[in-house]
Length: 300
Ligand SMILES: Nc1ncnc2c1ncn2[C@@H]1O[C@H](COP(=O)(O)OP(=O)(O)OP(=O)(O)O)[C@@H](O)[C@H]1O
Ligand SMILES: [Mg+2]
Image: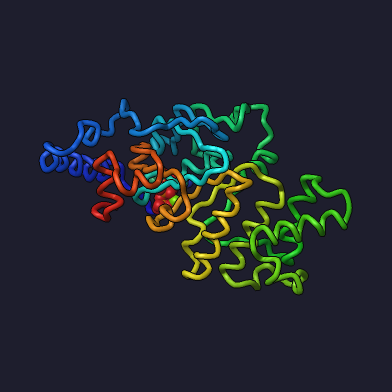
């Protein structure tokens, strides 16, 4: 994560926009060069017919710093949505809003409304522990517990009371590891430490751990950035299979990855959701100049 200076960022963005006005005035739609002020409206359809999560006017502040600005976005059921944008634009911050992980940061303040199905997840009465099981998270760096492979998976179902007996727990462990494509590789070494697995296996272990508590949504923040191409391919295949049963939001710096795994893509810039649309449209026919510059490697 890069720490950025807001003023410098604004200057960069404004330069890009000014440039767009000059260079592309004839070919670009007016929408494509609209400035990113507080009245800026996201380009593309932010709502979907079958939302699993629905965000309305979400703002995030770290102290005085306005890190996410008036974001409206639906996350569609059984779809993968990719969140892309330059370092520091707010992807992780926005992702963390979706299961209230920002609550753990003292200076962080979230406003607006986020619903999971019909439930307002920022309702003061809501217990965040079950919420974080329903909306699970996989981090950039695989972070298995310093426990056995078996315990890494069994821990969540046990504390959430999802298995009544040892036999049931064994079943959850096997099923979760199988769904994460790891069972065959680890079934004979379940009592060995999770930290002894390779990086790619550890990441699939973390995915299995998330699945074990029966989530509805899985949030992934650059889940492959510490993995080699082979392990990355396995995790990407897995994401595609998981889509059948889960809703997934993934942050990635890899355009290829976003194109391969997602059906919808959201482009963030300086805390604004600039553009959202079908992944194919975003990558072949972006409507905002900033999106185009980013995906063609001219910026970011
Ligand atoms: N814990 C924090 N305290 C203060 N500011 C923060 C904190 N986390 C993020 N920020 C700031 O919020 C903005 C968005 O950061 P965020 O980490 O969400 O960006 P990102 O798009 O995920 O970047 P990267 O691609 O580098 O991971 C940045 O300006 C960052 O400096
Ligand atoms: Mg990040």
